[in-house]
Length: 413
Image (tube, rainbow, N blue to C red; front, side, top):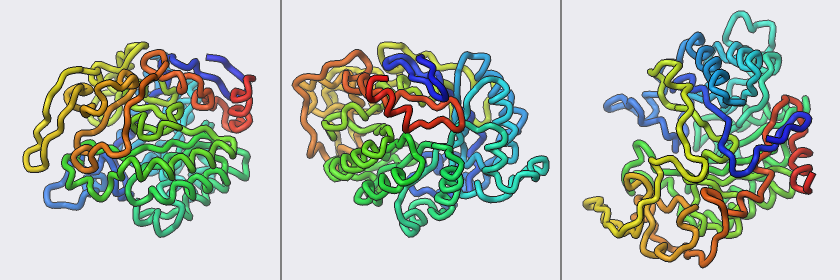
């Protein structure tokens, strides 16, 4: 890792040194695509009821996880939930992270940052944002799922105005940050407008996360209103990437088959190479009931391939989904986690590509996809990803000029 003033360049192809502190699933939001909303679901209740009634980890447990992340050699971590800005101990967690030499990024929908902090000892700060900045927070990851108030409310039951108020406050301080957009059927057309919104603010790295049918999204019927077809995504996504990169930001696209957007291959990373993304979590998340030692343990990941759970398994097979139909495959990843339809049989990118969710194939088929005759790279990353240095720039100091840092590495600095 090459250290510069305020930022560092993660070595392309090296494993991530990032972790995650999962403070618990408690959340006031209602994101329509939420992966966690069906976990520990309440029988007969609303999709998001479990999140309303979930608990947070104690602050003491969270501090213990932070200590163990540092002890286990990680350099930075994200704070996630649920909605971590609802946890009264969040500023104390940030202080502990900084005291242990870790950089820390808070993942948030941004609805509570401009409100007073929850913990009485933080009341000297007028807003939670002030309290976190005073504690030394390094970064934020804002959820930007729409470019309009109406669209944002429909997707999350939250307010875009509140998110933008927090972003404006950070912009006024010269504090740059990151953003996430879950790409789903309801926001595909506005991806360029979302990119314009990011580009006009202090976003230096924008992630587009293609909606995946995990957890409760267990059938084509459940995802029919959420999972967009790849040919519909490709054009708006390419325009969005162009807007952001023209503004000096880096872009990562997660969980898109490589041939769905060939012009974006260097920006795409999926389950195959995700642990070589410098922002990826190397310890366990989604375990609010487990002890700190378990949660902070670094996962075993080979440096030259994906985790075993995502291993490529060649061989013809048919996956039967009952009344929904069947999917033919020439190979799968893991225990039928992703599939490679017969179209992929001679594709040179198969060792680097996730493949497709079988539910996607049942819903949309394989239209718009075509195999690669050639795909250079160094497993598990294609050569274009290894060469896309902006994706490997990490923020180390709160007021680092990250767009300048990205320009520095982009031009061979």
